[in-house]
Image (cartoon, rainbow, N blue to C red; front, side):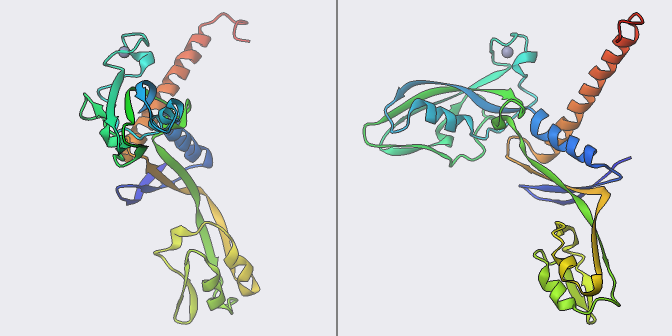
Length: 274
Ligand SMILES: [Zn+2]
């Protein structure tokens, strides 16, 4: 069974280890996170006034890429909504803006009836208006998936193999050169000998610079095939815990529907299954 352990966590990033896993497992989790976790993003913008220097299309593109705080409990996917995709208060939300120059229009100037829905980075500038220039629009946001467009992706996810580093102390005659060869400070000198700096050990990205420099082939570095370090940097729509939870439950849903299809296939007449 795969063991998950949080290594570090802060507001912008979470780092955890996967033990007894495979590259396929880690990559499945990565793809589920970036493609299968729904978040809100603006999908349509209706302009009633725009005398700014930017065309409607350019502004709509900028608005579409804004990161919106997402409340997954209050909104449904359009495809799963009672309105059958027509658009209603349960599956979409509007943000409106009215501004007159001279001023800089920021993301936080957009008004939304739902106070929970707002741009994560309010100070994102949309456009600068000169004196007399006006901008007025209504933007409609809905839930979507990263597989459709990256604006619906909840964050950046990647992983690497844990490093397996072995030092042959007797053969290693140039410890200082080895320390200097590492771009991420994995090594240190202890009692005149080359040693692994435990604090920086996991920073090793298998560049093999130390292996090239070490005298008498005294260092070996390999990928650990069953242990990984996984990184997740949420853009801000959802927090890291929520992202992983939704990703995993979406996979469980996929497995369930797969199981049902297999069962359906199982009751088919022999010959129909070919
Ligand atoms: Zn609806």
